[in-house]
Every structure is written in structure tokens, then in C-alpha cells.
Length: 274
Image (cartoon, rainbow, N blue to C red):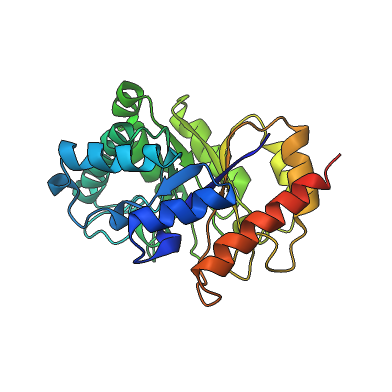
């Protein structure tokens, strides 16, 4: 059976207790955390706060999946820049996030954050790939220590200019060459590739460790034109045992509608699979 998660920023300024109760009643059991929803200063979010957050989420019937939006709303961090000091700070921050992820009980960190990885003007893609590989490779010892994996996230042209396809993310993964670095797939992003989404899933079954369900219209799964039946069929066919986590960007329909319709649509698509 698939495991369904939800990203915590979906609930905006809802009290955590209310958000957890609402999501759990609908059948979500995974809680994915954007660090900026916890604190704007990672070092001030100490062990007691981490434990309290984890205990509240787990007592509501959830497992904390891990982190995403890793570099969002940060300053002075960048994955592909030629600035060596900035890359070193980025490695250090990824290590700090890995420790946070472990403390919360999470196992995976989705590395998207397009603004902090886009290739600066005048820099070659080869240089950007080498720099990104170096930043992540230097974080591997801490990833191993914390038993946390980074999931590289391809993103479409609307988001930026780096890792626009699953194959490019696989290339970066191979450059890093660590079991702690695998692949994340996102329906909105895959819709930009041209290759059928279900084919991308099958082609990358050996590397994918996390999955985001959404639509190119920036709303939840099934709330746009993408047919989720073949997507869920492909996930079933490859024996995917990870989380399917709902990530939305357009909150206009309201939290209740987004969270409720997403679950209903996923369950309907799942039931249509053979």
C-alpha cells in the first residue's frame, strides 16, 4: 500500500495541532517539513524544541518523512556558484540540516531550492555540475553518520536552469557516487520533460527514494489536467515503497480543499490501478 504524506507549509499559519488532526483524519500518515516553517535561525532551534516538535507530530499518528525546501529563505548559500567560501557554507548548512532531519526522525532531504542552485550568468553547466557535486560530496560523511539521504530534485524550466530532467539529476548522482544521494521525482517537474511521466518513473525506479504529487497548475494531484492513474500504476509496477507526498504552490482554493481533494483524488487513482 502507498504511504501518503503532506508538506507542512501547506497549512500556512494553522496551529500545528489543528493541521495534524485535519490531515490525519483524511488518511495522511507522513509529515514533510520545510525548515523555514520551524525557525528562521536553525542554530537557535535546539534539541528540546526538536524533540517537542517530533513528539507532537508522532503522537498525532504521523511519521516525519524528512525535509524539503532545504535552502529556501536562506542568505549567502548557493549550490553551483564559483564562490568557494559560499559553497563551503552551503555544505555546512546541509550537514546542519541532516542533523535536524535525524533529530526529527526523518530519513530524506529533498534538494530542490531552485534560487539557491540556478547557474549564474557566464558560468558553464559543466562547472555548475562539478561545484554541486563537490558541495554534496563533502556532506556525505555527515549524511552517513545521521543515516539521512539527499534526494536530488529535477525541476522544470519555470523554476530555473539547473537539473531540469531526471537524467541530469542521475548524472549528478553518479558524480557524487554515494548511497546517501539518490533521486526525487515530482509530477509538476516531470510534466515539463516531454517524456511520459510513467516512463520517467520506470526508467528511474532503481534510484528514486521520494515522490511529490502535484500538478503543473501548482495545485494538488488530480486538481489539474494530469491523469494520476498511469502514474500510480507505474509506482505500483516498480514496487515503490516510499512516500507519495502532496506538495502544492497555489493556495487559492483554501487549505481544506487542497488537502481534502488531493487525498480523495489519490485514493481514486490508486483504486483504478490493476
